[in-house]
Image (cartoon, rainbow, N blue to C red; front, side):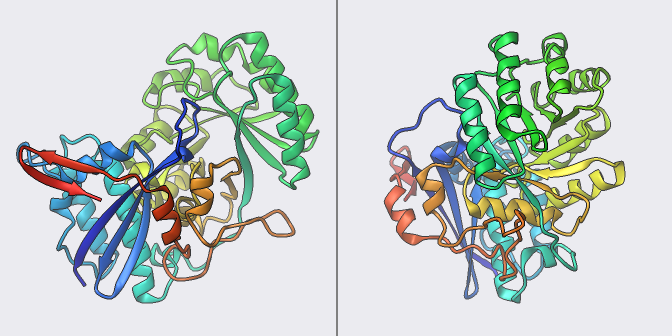
Length: 387
């Protein structure tokens, strides 16, 4: 087969706010090759990612992503790896290229799986997919009382674990302590509590460490992204000051090496990878294997649709010991309606990957039509993208 087309769909809710909610818009990718169609989803600014696919060449190391994809052969995993290498080399000066390629790469695994009649996790080399324990992923409430109510609802919905993140965390020490206490109270004594600081402390290790006592007291399992994604020294320094709380990070990694450096030099105990940013399933699988060799727990990062959720679970499906996974519960209607089928916890509170070919998720054409925002990109008197 050869890649015949790559179609990009910019979808958006009617109103997009400054809330740290990545499900407010989306860039969905459709790839065709032979008689098959594959779907993927990018995790980045949709319009900038579209531009990276179609932009005119600036020079030899700044070519559009399309140059390394369209017309290329797709007959096995090695062909996906070859395209990944071509994108990395030909578009090395195009910083959005990794994000654009990530959604395409997802779609290629989906398409290849459909062509072979196998789920993507089998194509990645696993014999079976182990069930995962989902944690409900939500934002902090604007007040501690609101966070308490969210935690109580999460527990009532049957989740054993939950992650609270982003603003207003970091605004004040006492406010953060109140938020932590409220989350623990709502989840109960045996609930798994996870905290995402949303990079609020930059590289300020002392400010981040000031929250550790309250985290230890509330039995927080991990302290996620207290710093900028590449602040390796800060991660390592904070890790040396913790007792039971593990430092987590990795969603900002847009290549395998960034994630490995966060493990080796940042000292994180949990590495969280977003397939829509790191370059897709292939490099995410490499990070999962690397984490296993270093005694670090691999976790998916996903806060959008079930298409992205399924993709994010494939790279560590066969690692039995890495069982906790992010499970978005507060997504916008766009993300919920994007797919016909959904991954849901079973009676024991576990989630299972689809065993259908590819990613096992069916995209709704009606949702694409409902939320699609028309885009046209012109250069001079020439239209280089219209959808």
